[in-house]
Length: 152
Image (cartoon, rainbow, N blue to C red):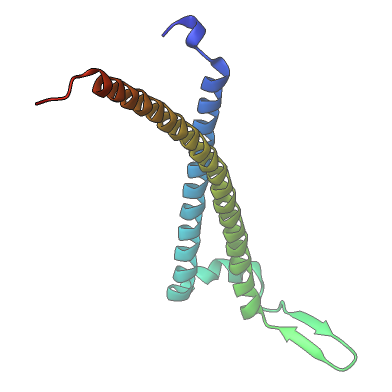
């Protein structure tokens, strides 16, 4: 490849697109891994209640959350508050996984749209080249047919 044929900006764009695609895929993969871990943790909270002991230690047995109004009194027992902590942490993890997956797909979508445009341009160029060559060949065939004597 000659030096004058080398286009630095085109090569940098390709590297940039490759890196964006890789980062997008990595974000999607990490988001999916987090989502699977969260799913596994929620499942284990229901199948192994002994894991809640750690959170029960954080909230003492005498602690309860009470909301009082003019006509009502609402008390949340400590057992329910014990469930609130792990589910709050898990919902934060789900939010992070959701953000990673959405961002990764947006990055990939932009890269795929650019790739589609580039491929469309190249295919159009190849199509135009083939069409020009076909017309040239047809012209040569026509000229040969006009100059050749009719066969007997």
